[in-house]
Image (cartoon, rainbow, N blue to C red):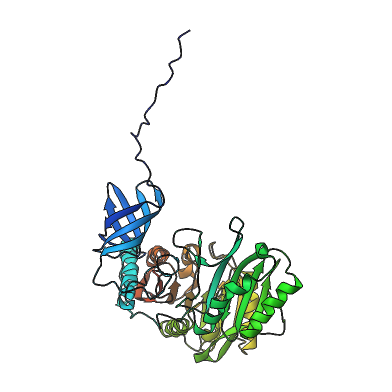
Length: 450
């Protein structure tokens, strides 16, 4: 028997692997350009670095957040040579909080970045450019956010409660005492929230807190175990001081402590009041939301004798204003509770030419009863995944006009390919600045049948 050979080392067929860069390492970099998400791009020793908080042409010191193969994610720690575009970050928590990643760019440059992101996706993926570019829809760059989810976590080692927003590139929680993008009514609640929560007797049982400002102010407390009477009293006193409703979310759906209280938001130009419950989807930027609805109606140009389809209708944000202008609106949503809420919103606003249906819109449109009569126009506002299966069948509905509201230019571009195949042309497109200080892009596109 041959004697086994010990101690041999075999090299993988692909050659030796480069050592991974450890998290936390600092590296001096020259930023070549900006990525589509607003991060700076640098190249060093065969690796591509994506650096939060850096601008093209800058020389920065970056701290590694994570590395995967030849891609390194990092954040700016220090700027040695600043771009002429750089402005001082308006927020004291910049660079640590993960919420506002492009606040070092002036607002007009943020809009230009988002416009480039949309144009690049439409050109590269769909090979099209709209016949007309619409001006960006925007509002105030601060004090716009009417809804926020505050992270809450008990640190067992340190025996302390962490309250704030998630850090950039990690699950760490950054303590926040003020947030410039929150609407003014939520600012004092945000600043006093950590101290109040630290008074509760079972911090281990606490989950996130959701803040909302609409027709009323609301504070929702998530909890994984029943709250004691004393803790409930502290929460109620806090909300009473801030003239806010208290909602609790244990098992089941969120519930108001006072069931007689109403919560919602107004669409003032149409004299509409929409009921809302914490956990429902709602656009966080009230001003841009109203401008978005108005632009969608203008582009869709609904006529009094028309039947219009609203897909991914949510609470009725588009369906109810549409119903004031057409013979009938058919609104479809995937979440049954939202369908019920939207129907209630229509009834409470005395709109009786709307019908609401629940359907899985990630699947192809079937021969549903509501689709058989066809539609003159369609409006859709899908989630980030887009609406690929839905748009594949849109031409069969007979719609001559289609307004697509998107929160992801990549899936909008993908779905545009399918719409062009069906004979639609991209008539108009533009960005919606729903989230100033972030690289998040929302867009609206108008398609017309050729």
